[in-house]
Length: 245
Image 1 (cartoon, helix red, strand yellow):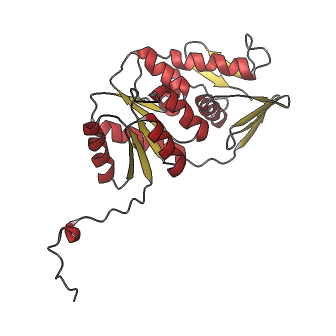
Image 2 (cartoon, rainbow, N blue to C red):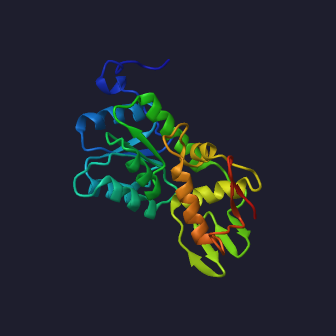
Image 3 (cartoon, one colour):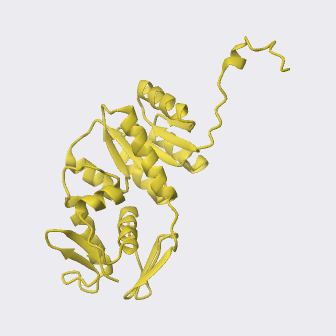
């Protein structure tokens, strides 16, 4: 029989959280919103690292290597946009989900091009934010059969996030790598812009598909021998795009 002499103490009544799921870095300068997010993720058994300014967030990211970041845009010392770039430079595979009151389409497109994995506009549904964060974490953990892929004069190492074209290094952004990986995993299949936004960017609904077109233009400029007449990253008019090795 287990003794219960200490069951009335405050310490005994506190739940024991295992934090087995890993740490989420919450970067938010509003203390009230910071507490809301901390309670929300703690309730799902995540460890929560909180930062109220850009420099503290960057230090925590380097020290703890979180499994995901929830990032506000308006921050002291270092802006959210600059932080997003720094996070992705340190760990390209770590998902960054932006939470901000700024809702203009141009800001969303810019953030995606800087490497953000998703975007939630304030005010938001806690359930929606949780779903987006967990979806981004699942995409990060999705196993891949091979990390190296070769086509034409290009050699891509998806694990190291490096590209060689004719033996010379080519620099791709994190989203360009994600887009190229999805194409190589679905070679010869026509992919709609909506499917690419959903699978690569994590959006079920997005106000413009120009994001995909802009990324395709940049990929062609970096990987195609003649970007104006692509042989591998093809446009299928009225349907989307197709990758041909």
